[in-house]
Image 1 (tube, helix red, strand yellow):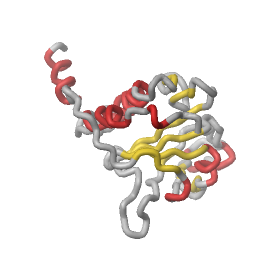
Image 2 (tube, one colour):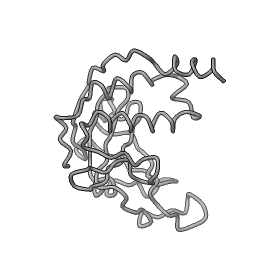
Image 3 (cartoon, helix red, strand yellow):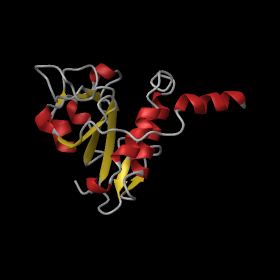
Image 4 (spheres, one colour):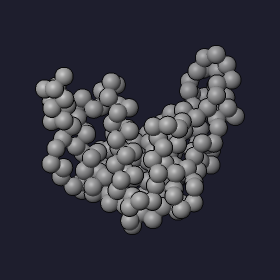
Length: 185
């Protein structure tokens, strides 16, 4: 991967993640909004290495300025498992870059998946950790018996970049921002 991770300010990035780690932002109504601003935060703190395209493009969130490669970000609370027999393995995640071959989700086929990214960032919003992997590895690990296209990565399928980052403290949290909006509607 051609992102220079030594230039990424993970403390500031996870400062946003921590500030948005509220019940409201984790609700189904606001999950997309939180994902959008998590992507924006990573882009902002990447030291101008990325262009954020996640709002406008399907199946990729960033373009690496230097190479033009595409990057998708998946974030979950507890992305990296901590159990005795699965320590470091990833929770499964759904791939949305496909065209179903049938009418229902259950009719999808692995060959329907379309490569829309070169790399995937894996963000754990609980342990404040980030890893990355490639499209080829994600595709290889697709569970084609699931009702929808899910990938299940083992700890040997990705590279850990930052582990248990201590987030910077933000002077405002999301609940405070929402209360400000509520006052003005």
